[in-house]
Length: 297
Image (tube, rainbow, N blue to C red; front, side, top):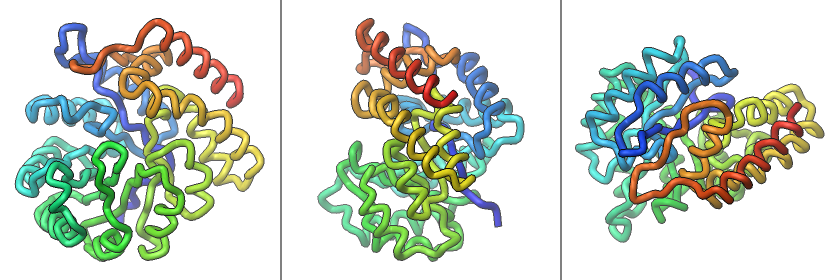
């Protein structure tokens, strides 16, 4: 059985031109760059990939481009929608395009009716019909709705549900999930500030936005932990956290894309209505990137 969500995985940005057109050439260049890093796999069409702003045709084109430029690295694709049917349809299309697994964000638009039973039915239906493994994805900061730990425990028994990304940033929630899933069910942290803590509790790795702009520094935390050098891992984690917070909570997608560009890759600009980072934000992000690089060297 293939192992999923191990180590550090970057959820890559989708670069756009100034007029909003998809910059597929820039995207391919980024995938080639990440394929040279020590990542176990690469995630596209995630939250930080602005999947919500992409057409279905663009999503399929992105998967095909990622697979062609990944040098054999597995490509995970975000396929979650607010409908079970459209999630299944998109999952089948990304599978045909070469994706190795589908990362499925829970539906949330009708959150007042989406109790645990509704979420369980949704994920089981998607997993039953998906030709590729399904990975659960909970991001309550954006959706306002978390997948309850008890539902995760039920879903972990499904043979085609092969892991989970938890972006709650809540270490107690992560512990509750870990307490009820099999030891071989991978749970990846989706929040970089808790990476070290999550690994110490048994998380399999991290799917972390900051890995897209600071690959070496992010991977270094994981390597130090795996080597048993906890003092170094804690030191590196503390150094990484300010940048991680800046390119997620503070400045969001615009800040992450600016940081990706500062790292020598193609960040592009966000799609409207999101606006690019300001000059003052760029200066602060650069300062944090320089500090992070220095700490990891």
